Amino acid sequence: MDLFSVEWSGAPFVLLSTSHLTALAAIVALNLWLSRFRHSSERVKRRIRYGIVAVLWTNEVIWHTWMMRLGTWNLQHALPLELCSIFVWGGGIMLLTRSRRVYEIAYFLGAAGALQALATPDLGVYGFPHYRYFAFFLSHGLIVTTVAWMTYGEGMRPTRRSYVRSLIAGVVLMVAVLGIDEALGANYMFLAHKPETASMLDMLPAWPAYLPGLFVVGIVMFAVMYAPWEVADRVRAHKNRRGEVAVGDARGAARTHTLSGG
Image (cartoon, one colour):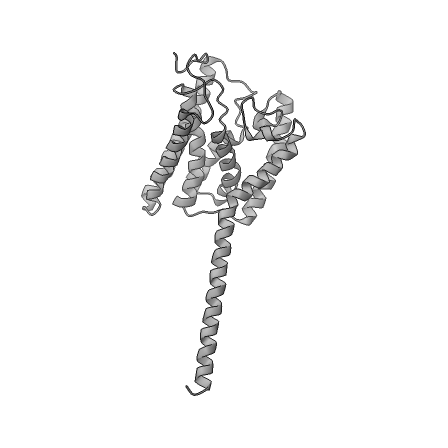
């Protein structure tokens, strides 16, 4: 078996197989380990950010080199027009610049795309231990890690406004990529047809009716991703109100006590 060959005779990738679950567990373990450094010095945090970028971008360059050497690189599937391809580069820029604006979009669009890809990988026949298996999970796992690190490591968080901005950015991106798909005969972002492998898009109607459905899926996914922050904000606001009421009651009781000569 040639681990770098296009013709792979080994075991094909199987959804929710041991190799799939092991890769997901490794991504979770990486982020749990990195979270230990969230209170470290700026020097340590900078090294972590630069290290993630180096691995993320090197992996992407190697993948494109692999396709070129095997003659499989083409305009129809290798341009950085998938959500995950965009945020391989965008996530790296976010880490290097610590841009809050990029983070707000990456939190929703980048992480949502990568999580969906990790849940239902479009790997075809390339199962463990083929090179494509490792490249795929490294790339998509680190996209999630870029957002996760900026959240627990750098203290950033999404807002209601970033939720809305991300939905708008998603629509603009879909329209632009759809035009490119039409021009190239490509299927970037799965806007021309559904993926060949199983995915959440299977729950939607056939093309083109599923295009509006993609937007609805985005609204729901973004809402789920923002929900913990919304709940935390409401709990915090409720506690603050209770605290203000308690302070007000205490002051009122003290004033009454004073006036009564107690």
